[in-house]
Length: 437
Image (cartoon, rainbow, N blue to C red; front, side, top):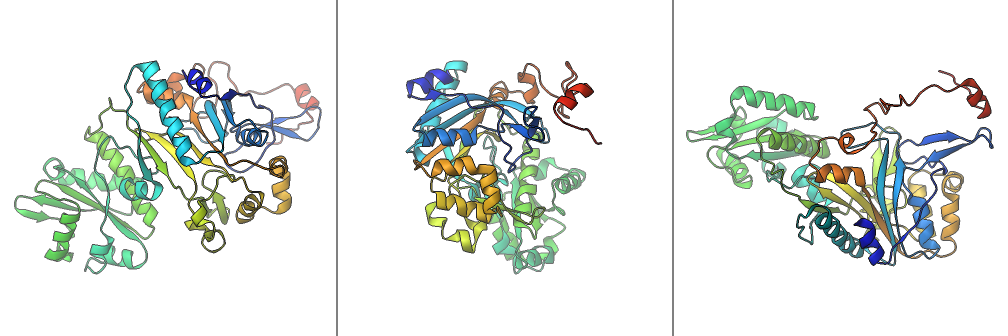
């Protein structure tokens, strides 16, 4: 079905190399020693990213590939070290073109393969809105329970945990568990607080709205007007339980309560497992600061284009620059992601500079791409889907291993072939490789 649709829309299926060059920016590469070039290594591709961009320079305006990809990263239920990716790239397009075509692709494939009717266009949400309302850049929208920021209400309250947090640049987020006050005992609320700590919160405050009035350990620090404003903003009614997380790091306040939201939905059986809720998340940050590396790193990859209106911020406030990037989310899981690429050589060099790449390092790692750019590059963009993950979601499976013929375990080993394994010393000598543990 995928090939039928893309062939009909004049895409060319082109294979790109498996043995390629290591470009260390992103997940760890799987390295392959070269026998013919002692001391040098190939890398297995994490994606065909650079090759498909060069294909756009070469005039192949519509490319796709069902590609094998490899990433040496920590594994989860929806992640394997080797996986199959549907890779798409197009020239002379903008974000709207790619979103429109891919909605039609998803509709065509799912309706033809499963018979399930899919309504397009899909809902859209900016990254900032997704984080503010759901505490996640891949929100599950099959149920409500959106988060609400009450920082403006509590900044002048007598409850210092809230007011001092906000004054220090943090935030306070609230979540209304409808009828939760009628179903949660005090012990269960305490257990919920412990769960919040597991998700990174420092604690959990709460207000139980009963028929006899407000019950809450923080009520004595909040005047009646403040409580009324909080209840009004969170649409609080008799029987509801409202929970709060405060943190000096606004992002941590969002993500911890966002994770608690998903936990509550599963615990309270609020998720309709028959639903397929697609959502585009757009306008991701272009960069994020790595405390470990003490530099900015690319949120997606170094070839993602910033939004035109944000380019002046690259020198002054790089953390505020938004990217022409988009993810397609299905039921709280990232199905695929992509972006419009940088096609201007000077802007690409600027991006490398912000990422802390010397000119020499940029040339060593990505010289072949930068040389290709010198021949003139069309505006281009694309998207990639994890096919194994897509099948997992459509089948309602909990783990990606359940839809792969020969999956790896959590420590990236194959139970059947017992890979990885030791090799003969002669093989190592031929590769000029020594093992030092």
